Image 1 (cartoon, one colour):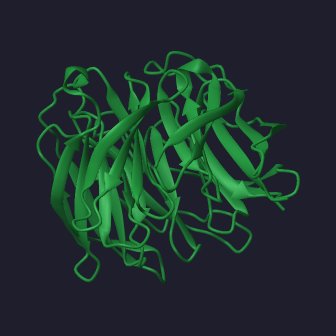
Image 2: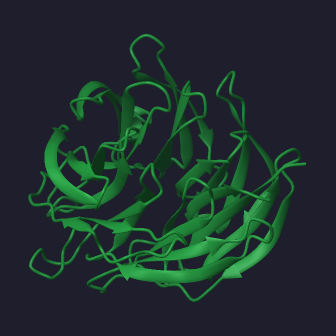
Length: 369
């Protein structure tokens, strides 16, 4: 009988753009992959506002960002994961070299991690880095930054795009480039990655329509495609990806909500389903998960349906390691909801009782031993 570990980052210090801060830290649960039964394993405290987290490829290390208003630098904290008990053991932390840490990811080799800072302080406030790369030791400890880059510019939305706001960082599937979605300047910034030392060199960019506000993006698991979810425009951009050139081309742009909700709902997370046939986007305001089907011929994602998130403000969600379940963090309902995923139809079916945990903002899975 296989099981999975579910980690949930929960806001525990007030933020003016969150309704509550009812969390305690990082909540852990064991999920039975067959029945979906949930067992609470406890909460790791001693961390401020763990609003995003991710596990490395083998599930041995969990890294967590701390998003605290007023700090010139957030932190990224590394924990060792006990696959049997789900216990997290503190390893170390590093500063994110900028304020309001928003996202993190690991490179394909498992030797590096990167974080980005949304940033609301003046651009003159040091250190003001947008993206930072860290080496990882064999035991998962984070080394001092190996590279950092600061974005410049602003967008057309005077309220939300007064300065750069880096919001998501990912490596390309071949590990040759690092890509950063910046909501404030309507761009995906592309950096050549030095896999030896962790260096970043500016390489190119994809410029999206003014006021789009790219928040998160994801690569297709098998095809040369990527998809960017745009928070300000409530839209999804389908992108052709040229791996050799390290470049993107816009091939589709579609709303994530009905026309009457544009401007009243704001996108959150994006995930391409295992198998690459379907894609899901979170809508805060409509409080749904929009399902897109990926066209076999063109790779363009088309909105097909929406499933109620089962609570208020679905900020993050992710598929279980086996791909059969989707866990949704409903931030303003103090609960995580589980859905069964039908790979044939793309349908999401809620099941089980809500998993109670205060102000959940981040979802991460690993396999249990």
